[in-house]
Amino acid sequence: MSEPSQVEAMADQEQAVLGHGAAVAGDARSGIGQGAGGLAGDVAGVAEAIDGCRPNLLVSDLSASLRFYAEGLGFRIGWRWSDRYSEFVPDGGYGEPGEPGTALVGRGKAQLLLTQKAGAHSDWVHLDVHMASQVDRLFEEWRARGVRISEAPVRRPWGMYEMRLFDPDGHVLRVSSPPHAEPEPLEPEL
Image (cartoon, rainbow, N blue to C red; front, side, top):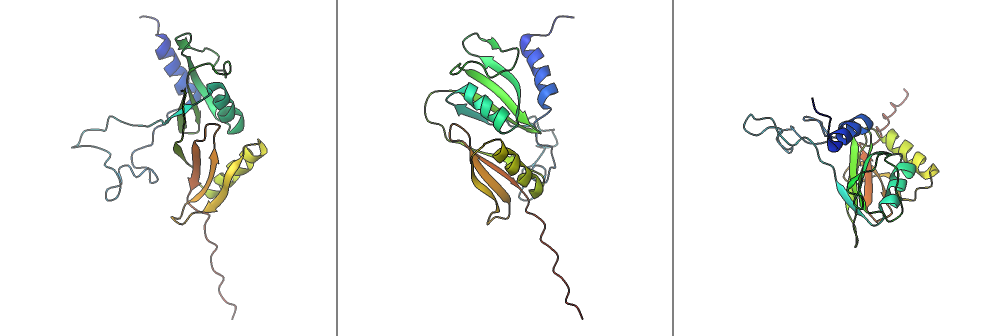
């Protein structure tokens, strides 16, 4: 049996550090496998080959972005690729400021690829959270870490409970869940 390649070894490390980042077929929030209004999970009885999506955000300074996502938002670094040395960086650290490359970060099932590239960047990424109380906890955690939240959690007109923040490159991160449960109306005393 041959030794695993560097790419296979990093894929194993990614799996161990971050877990699987794919939405599960039939997940109510993903809309996959939901019939009317959702996307079909299978095509003509054949299992779908695409089982996940990782947004790739273009960033101006990979080291600064890794620091923001790891220290500010509590994401873990799965791997980091150095363009300069054409290899994976073994320790998964932030690297030197301005060092070009790509990295994978994740928290829970959410995973993002970050790639250093010159020029303007502006994308929106939506991070799903199960409950409104978790959105509130993330808001408090991130604020305590010094992250500037651009919009505090609020129930949006479309019904989701959402907060918004910007990463160092101006990417909008939307973090939302179903809203807090409405309190039951009190029955009048007789």
